[in-house]
Image 1 (tube, rainbow, N blue to C red):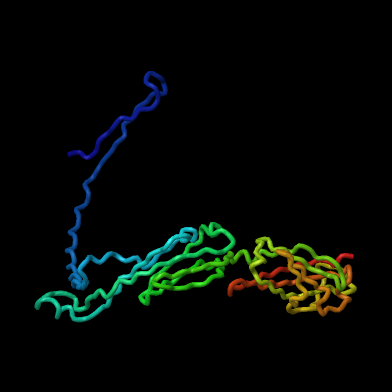
Image 2 (image 1 turned 60 degrees about the vertical axis):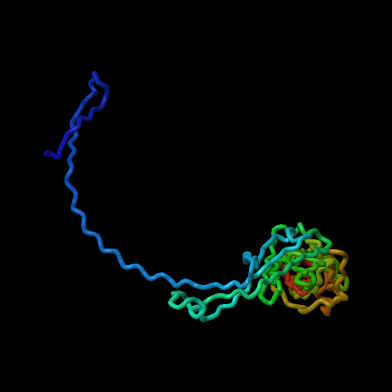
Length: 298
């Protein structure tokens, strides 16, 4: 049988000079024979069954040893946790009838552990400020509830446990990021009255303990203010607490009382300040570094 054929293909509009047709030739040929497939591989033996012993009259309910909730969800509620405790033993083949095909290792139910958790929120700020922070609770075999708090929240609180209830009482809380919101507010005065002021944009300085360390550098006296000149260290160290005045969320550092030669506290001198604020709350601490360069006003 002929494996070639023709099909006419026309272009243009019939009855016009542009109309024309020509035959297009098509052909086909037989494909190749397929190859034999391979034999399938042997399967593997299944695993032995395992024995679980539960010596109690009623059905054993499933346990809930962990829970993760948003902080606001924990307020004014009790979270109940449970843990089914098991022991793995050997000798299943001696318990069942002779000839039983089963793994010799088996589990035996020991006890059901239960515990509850309560969050008591006594902090002045609303717990809703931490709406997207989550707490994970885990009931352990020693009947203790492990509380995993969000790492970026600093808590001031105490944990107690009584009659299976773990209670976490929070008296204060801040975000870690709120401890590094200091910014320069003013650099004024000269000589003994030279001060450097900062303000806490987070407004949490009533809760946070703050200490300061400074590197005070100036240009050479002859250079006066030169943003690109050479700066020389005149004092480096902690700022004593009696030279720091705090008014709510504003700090004023009395630099003029530091052991700095008065020559480098004069108006017109170029100053470079490297300031470190060490901020702590409830056993947590962080550092905020600030650099500033300017001139003692004339």
